[in-house]
Length: 145
Image 1: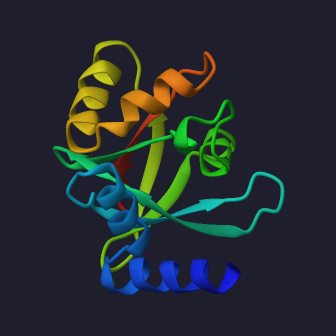
Image 2: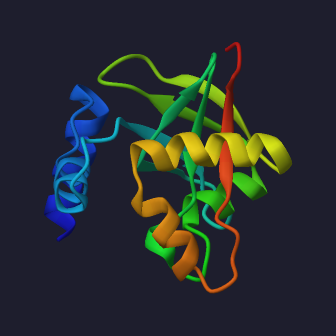
């Protein structure tokens, strides 16, 4: 499994291709969702951690959904961004783009959630499964290096 995850990270980092996205979306009966490499700083380790993740655009910003498949706890990348909101994204082999994370709320969250769920309808099922946890919508605003 570790080997497959390494292959997935390589494909997303350098080519912007995600086999996981393709498989998950095919199983859900939807078109593949765009995927990029998110780099966060580990809140405990202090090391850079790469995570391939579905992403969406809102103007110049990116946004991502902290669904963890509807699990009752937040994904680790979200906890890392809560502790240190600076990170980087890499799209299809391009340069790393520095970003600053913030959690969307209120009408912004509702608008972005609806757009993401239109691309990937299982998000609504994940929210129902999340055991009362509100799945975060994280906006990643581009920063100048």
